[in-house]
Length: 190
Image (cartoon, rainbow, N blue to C red; front, side, top):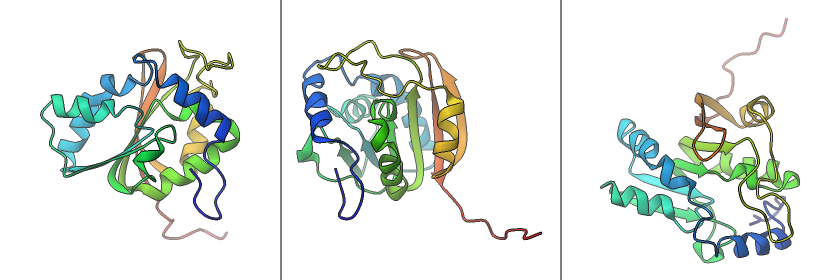
């Protein structure tokens, strides 16, 4: 999606490939594994509104409902599902198994968009190696395969990283809790 005057977060050609991949019932299921962590964050921070950036088939919503989580608002966004509408700000923004799928030329625009909608906290997961699935054009579904040392400076430009943990759920990766970046109260000019 593109907001007026902003760079694209996805190309039309790649959106079409993602729409084909999402027909596979086994694609876009990582949020099922992370639902318990999301539930904990919601409970610990007394949050009941969630924006699901890269929601796919809304498996996170379904998993949270199965765990008895009641949300006052759930805002899905996924460019492969245009009927979801634009990304919405929320106290908790989940971006689960999404960033490694972003086209490298669009990553900065996606990070800016996430920065715009994270009101209080973000829960992001990133797999750092190859995916088990391929795009229709033959490329690995993880367009960005990079270690945490590559990701962290990019994320730190947009967010305060509150917690980071490496994991081996569905492959090697990391999950993190972020918050909006604070402006320094002072800058030492010496």
